[in-house]
Length: 88
Image (cartoon, rainbow, N blue to C red; front, side):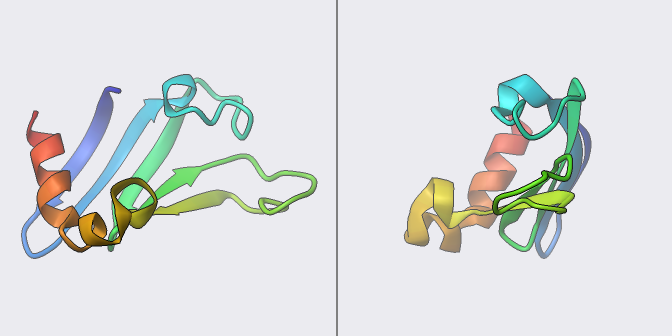
């Protein structure tokens, strides 16, 4: 997946990007062709359209903790993983 935006990895990895909504797998939560995705303090945040019901009712952001994709041990070292991915 291609991401365009701002990246930083000083004391803590963070980024603010635009990604393809379909490639991100969240087309059912956002109809726009691109989606803003932030990575802050070990979690990804995806901009979504407020839903009428369910766990995203009236929400504009969906948070995904790093442990969801990397496991608990991987989340502890997420800084290194995120930096390596951003450099590719």
